[in-house]
Image 1 (spheres, rainbow, N blue to C red):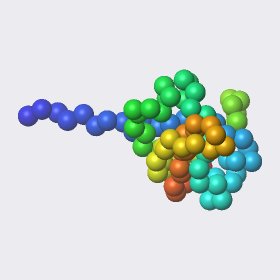
Image 2: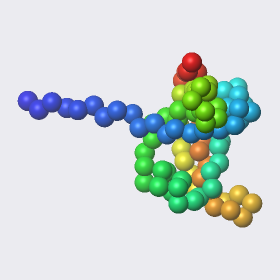
Image 3: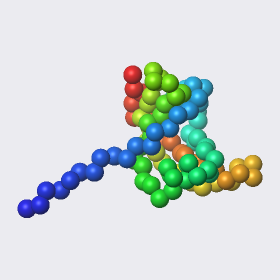
Image 4: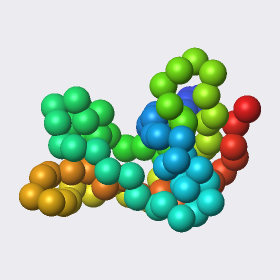
Length: 95
């Protein structure tokens, strides 16, 4: 009998402003946008994520929350190619 390995969830780590972090937790903001740069292309194209680990800022001591990831779409906003990262349910704010 062969042992089946469980794949660990693939989490997208995403930093946002404190204002957007609070709006996402309240359910008022359900989509975050990122420009389609080489950096974001390497992180998002062809990758499958199960959830988002949202961070309020970039310092070591920030608030975090785990959020359901609905989908990542390629869109055009204001004439610029962007990724639309759509959020679902907040799983758990993290301390």
